[in-house]
Amino acid sequence: MKLNELTLKESLDALSKKEIKLEEVYADLDLAYAQKNKQLNIYLSKNEDALTQAKKLTDKPLRGLPIAVKDNFCTRDLPTTASAKVLDGFRPQYESTVTRRIKENGGVIYGKTNMDAWAHGSSTETSDYGPTLNPRNPEHLPGGSSGGSAAAVAADLAIVSVGSETAGSIRQPAAWCGTVGFKPSYGRASRFGVAAMASSTDSPGPLAKTVEDACILLNAFAGPDEKDATSNQEKAPDFTSFIGQSIKGMKIGVIYQDVKEIAKTNQKLLQELEILKELGASVEIVQAMDPHHAIGVYTVVQRAEVSSNLARYDGIRYGQDRSNFGDEGKRRIMLGTFSLTKGHADQYYNLAQKVRTLYLENYRELFKKYDVLVSPTSPSYAKKVGASFDSAMFGELEDMLLEASSVAGLPGINVPFYRDDESNLYLGASFIAPMWQEGSIIKVADAFEKNTKWNSWRNR
Amino acid sequence: MSVNDSQVKHIASLANIPITQAESEKLATAFTETLVVVDKLKKAGASKVKPTYQVTGFKNVLREDLVKTEYSFTQQEALANAKVTYQGYFVVPYVLQNKDN
Image 1 (cartoon, each protein chain N blue to C red):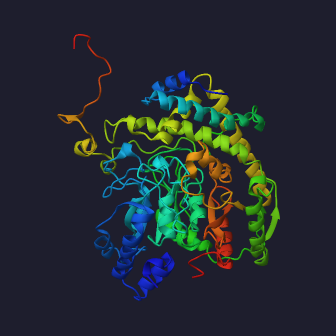
Image 2 (image 1 turned 90 degrees about the vertical axis):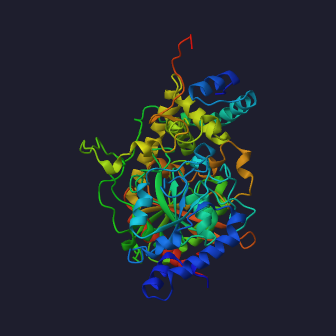
Image 3 (image 1 turned 60 degrees about the vertical axis):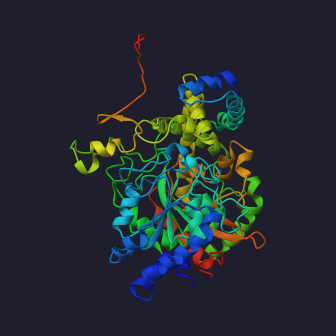
């Protein structure tokens, strides 16, 4: 077996037992990169100095292993474009907190991954540098906006990767690429140095081959940061401490079974959730607030925050001028501007924030009875290349099952729960818990993953 | 509600986004399509609910008012990505212009 196909946990264990060498890991990874990257368009830039840097980090927790990072994280030594022409040629003069901590913990940034331009999308097709293709089936999209980071993991072009989510941008591409995607609570990981999209929901998080790998990486970068006033000042827990725990007696609510559009996906998920019952958890169907309203909430809040955040790109201090925005960027900035203008702010922006309150109240009620809620991550399998251009609302519809949890700041994990034999495409389950209660979803997601046959690395 | 071409041009000028006539027409259609979905929020029964602008509940997050050189740019770093500089300054477009110039 090639060493780039190992999980992060397996790689760390093998390195510490001296069964493998870093040089061999990088040699196998470089070979896979040479074979696949051109076709799949996963990396926008590659760290040519990776192995040299890695050899100096062997005594740190991540032992010099290669990690892919979404291109909206500022990195001093690699270009940072957020897949947008406006940032062509930009070289950050400072480092994002997430990548700085990964480096301090012995991770090496192997390269920067493609994404929807400015993270505006759920396809990676709106990238100004061309779409990324789904490694499981290249006729299909990887999802997005962290599509490059999900594809990097699925194609074994990274041991583990970093993405960011505003509403679905980690979990949805993870579902479409058949990987794990972990969006921690809003405020758990610092937004400092991440190209801002919607500041009230932007959350960095890991994409990985297993839930355990995601926890190992999240340990390296989560926690308080005085450079981000919305980061939780409490010390983050050791996320790996929830791995391998019993879920006996845990109460799991299955939501969105009443959503007609996803009947087939729902049915498959319900069957697979029998596993949790066998492990001693209670699993029951419960009605949650209609997810369709969350599409409107997210659309308004996201665009309003985008119009404010992207006002800074004037091409004077860095980057190119505002004529370089792509179609999607223009649409979002302008609709946001519209929703904040006098006369429309109450009708749209304030109304959306009121409906957001209803979702928070609904979750508060549901979590009185349940430890964890679960639903499909995406309505169905990865869509075909080109699909995102059919509707101005493509992303919002593909992420409709995740938006409510995002605007509420909840932590969520995607775990693959089914693979279609014919297309080789995956379906994913989304586990969510109350804010700051990552431990509950880690326990359930880890137990579920280890007992399904659908994790392609655990079941090689 | 629907959005027309002249509204789109007004928004474009507010947002400082240069657009062509063809783009303006396309954007009017896209905005109308999006607002059809957004307008459904009126049926969510939220008119008397308090809005939520942020979810962490943190209030008045402050730090000591100290200069930290490790957080600061040197002049050289600040100017490193600017296309046009003059004697250590950013060059910006005119906002006010003397009519004799």
